[in-house]
Amino acid sequence: MLQRNRTEKSRLTVFHLVQPVDGGVARVVTDLVTQQVRAGIRPVVACPPQGRLPGLAAQAGAVVHPWPADRAPGPRLAAEVRTAARLIRDSGPHVVHAHSAKAGLAGRLAVRGRVPTVFQPHAWSFDAVKGSTAELALTWERYGTRWSTRTLCVSESERRAGEAAGIRAHWSVIRNGIDLAHFTAPTGGGRAAARSSLPEPFRVPADTPLAVCVGRLCRQKGQDVLLRAWPAVTAAVPGARLVLVGDGPDGTELRRGAPPGVLFAGDRADTRPWLHAADAAVLPSRWEGMALAPLEAMACGLPVVVSDVSGARESLPPGQEPYALVPPEDPHALAAALVRLLTRPELRRDLGRRAEEHIRATSDVRGTAAAVLGLYQELLSTYRPMTRKRTER
Image: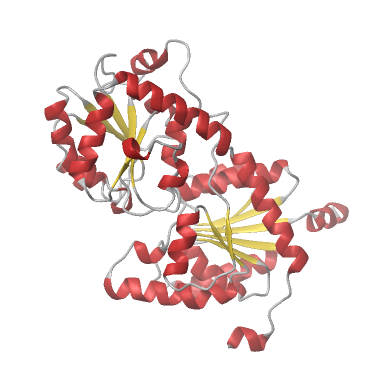
């Protein structure tokens, strides 16, 4: 037992502090943990006990600790920081990797430069709020960057947005990747077979134009904009169907206001059946770092329509911007782009084929994980602990 404990401590230990535990952040952490275990790293994940992430991370081979933390800062923040500090101290990591705004806040306050710390915003917190709350979030990011050994962005546009906001960080950019063995184009009968395998009432005929939107039902992902656009789509494409895959805080309101032709599939552990059945994928986000859902859709051979937010242009194949990009919060442009795809099968096939080729050449999660490991090794080779004087400055 003593020898095993010594062996465990000698392995590179990475402490992932995570909140939220669903959506793209949970998938990114799960994929990283999976690849890190395969590379011989000892990943430790601390996150709220609800949601999919704790089970997925444990299944991948990580040590998982419950970290009770709200999604947004509040009166429990001091206790959350103390708990994070204790978990980090007990785990003895070589690197702390804090994911998203809340974990970035608590993790950096808990560590304060005493361990190499990577902060990965997964989209900037000040984009998600307005008014004085946005000012407060930005003030913190400008101040808290002193305790980020490296700020890791998933797109160049996310980094540029941080720089433009006055965050003076030590930057790295490593683009998101996906599991290309999992997300593949449909085979064995193609999209018609995929549609027939869906549960009722989603089993639409093979000749029915079908768009899919995969994402948490929340303001960030912009499904409300999509629902405002959909009547114009069905006016031009009679009988078209839209399936929203996911759930979230806006689910009840979105269902209440949905126009005809819209179906809600709820939260699904595997989104591939819906991607394989669709003619096009859409994600009208208000802000992102680099969304995973369009990458997954393109890997399945689908053309996409996405709003022109951080990471969108960088995820697309060259030349597809005129077909795929629309301004955020513009239902008219969104409807026009969807109509163009749903009424032109040859265009869909061409864009989907090129999208699949592009994602397979650029977005393998194994490359992403290898680059993150290289970042850890770089930090460990150059890291110098912060002195108390520097911390308090």
